[in-house]
Length: 265
Image (cartoon, rainbow, N blue to C red; front, side):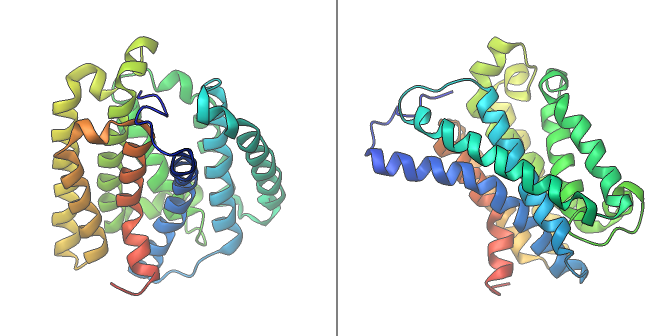
């Protein structure tokens, strides 16, 4: 992974970039339900949406804390990350009584998976498949009234595959920045096993599949996101640039929600 200060940029700019890097996963958690709401017409279930966003904030804050202390600019954010984790976890637990039993079953399943994440991500292709599946499943289920236990029926909606392809492409591109660290840790991610070039190629293929599906369904926001990911895949060395690389990938994934909420599509 590239050191946070590798580009010797202005400290204020570096702080802004890092804040965006921390905030965009939560924004992505809001983008997915916005798209699903537009596509399916389902009414949003606000306690479930809030729980989803708080869960993402808590999970990502904890994961970054468990990565160990960072030097330089990154060290300043650890107390804030710790506070974010505690507050998000407390508020999320407070929302549990509001969740339907069918949704709560999925929460327990995803929670158990998250607890074992640092082990199962060592399996081949686990990061490339498990992470986008969890994002798709949670984002399409928790913010809406459930129609089945664990919300498994939501995965049968045609938009689920399009979202999965976009998220899988984004996860592959984000894995580029972790290639060296994953290799040292024995994590058999796609970049570690096949290299950055083929990882970028696969990401572009998945994104192209999403573009074709979105185009056929007349979903320009999703097609725009896939197109942006294809362009990012053309420059894997730039996409692998630590925080900044992850930032632009997350921005591409959030694009459909932004376009939807601003009524541009």
